Image (cartoon, rainbow, N blue to C red):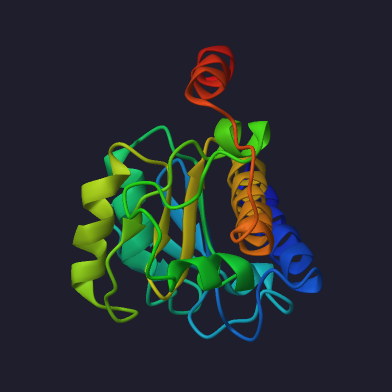
Length: 209
């Protein structure tokens, strides 16, 4: 994908998420790997009104080289890329149901959501809860780095989900699956549920990786 197409892809994906209520105001950020760095959504920008020409461009060392100033959470994205070089895109949202789950006191911090559906297992797998740090705090980057070598998706406590993928569409599909599962979990958490058993989860992981 050339850079012009990459810029258009970010803007198109962001607008779709905004129009469907997956983000609001100036929350959330997206990045996409280039051959010599990354494109990122700018700080203070709305997913509904992004300008492809004003996206932030960072070099391979994470330095801002062009466009508007990058999201203050750029370090989250860089930490994900450095931990797993195969990642091509990262999406971070403040999506309502995922954030709601991230503030619950009785979830398992090693794996926040149960295996409710096959697609959740296939697209997310296990979901650790990253301890709370203020937005923009460099300690959050180190906390994310501690999980990113083993997980492509995580939930930031009292903040929201961050998901990496082999493409922007893969990362977007995965974070939307996470949000849908968080919504199901909140709907059903006080009801007796029949989640997938360990054998079914292992079979899905063998089939789909």
